[in-house]
Length: 77
Image (cartoon, rainbow, N blue to C red):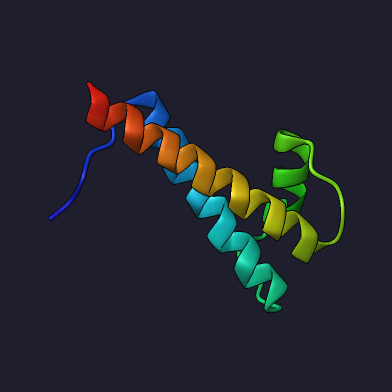
């Protein structure tokens, strides 16, 4: 069974979660893609600074905050 995301905010939550997972793999030493690293993408898009672990911690907090605000908004409608 598949899920189709059509709401732009749901797509944003999904993409943020995907980037967080990719960064976690990069911290563990795995290469996720041949192009730009998730670390570089996150730093460029969200303006975060620091080591991979510090960026991961900051970005995880952002993802959870964004996800909880999206779910709260969705339930309130």
